[in-house]
Image (cartoon, rainbow, N blue to C red; front, side, top):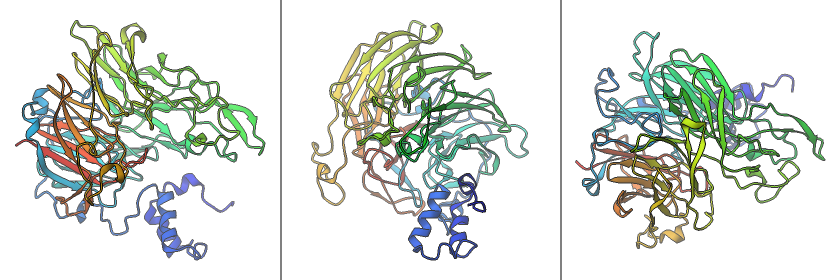
Length: 572
């Protein structure tokens, strides 16, 4: 209709504004036949987050407000885990000094506090811990800053949509009263910089106008530049014969960290989509498309480059930069080189189980590289770039020879039923690359040559005789087994989280379990919000200053059990 706002315009409104329009505002007559529940669903769908009429998710509504808010002065003043991978190389390794937790103390870990996300239903934001504070986003679109030791809340910030990304903290200039900013993105393609001290908005920028584009993992921050990955959910809807499939191309955007000014945007598929044919319904179809970037960029200061893994193609023929490791120049965004881990992988989730004319004729295997490439220096000084596509084969590339293949090692024993064999990746040091697998195994690989060091199968709760809170056996309760979450490494121990709700710590020597905790239960929270844990399939544990932080309740894909709790463990 000529007078109706566009979908892009509606998506800029809050769900509260949309709900007001259809209940008491100008759209109330048009919505008079909708039930209250349907009005709420319309508001939440268009608004991109849960409706919060009472501001129950705000820090101001919580009973555990911190009594004081000490000055946030120095990023190096306390141990930290900043961003997705803890370092520029995304190794997810935390040194003994930063971890403050030895392998010998891991068996003594106990729950210190729990925080409930109001109205939350799936935990997909990984915490960042800097300056004695936890920064974490959630599906309820709130980002919180809280005391890392007690869980008391300093502030909250309400984004326009759910925040799946891991925040990254850095110095900021040009904003009086703000020395440091917390940077993050949301599920509608908005990037934010807020005052790390107060939560006040410094700047925001929408980096994509596409309806289905998302920022699904954390930005990387380096030299006052913010590098943001862009993915999309186009492949979910694109099999519909009425949908003009497909035009999305994954990309990386570089922003000035002080102002949000766009510096460059680089598409993973250089060729722009063009009309190719019409289906029998008369819908115009396009190609090429796909190669979403689901992972946080890895920064290589030596080569002045960044590396990302790309997803599958949506159209045929699959471009050579799909299912690939791609290297970009940090300053210009120019593509330096790419290495494809699997060819001809044109796939769309909407084409399973039934295909349409929009679907690729030769449906691929969905072997994205969903996890960040790991940049690692070996004992002999050589460098290696490790990539873990969902296929379950580990690739080692030479970052100093334009991504030349050094070795590859397949880890598949059986085909995993969901999401491929590897989803959010492993953790590494110079001695080993530790990788959780969807089939329930956990392996250690020598990063210098790809040889398997050890391979263990973890036991599901049903084999351990455990029960769910209502007394059911875990198998009957329907929680599936396997590990998709990112691993986290400290000297002597590696942490992994399962779809069955267990967080486990394994010995790096042989994979034997040092400690485990069942998170799929109800918790008493420091902020008084009713909370429970569930499956864990996305973000990994964060270990800082003797504490282990983990969110439980990942129901995003694969039949996970929902939840809304952040747990903090301590051996003290």
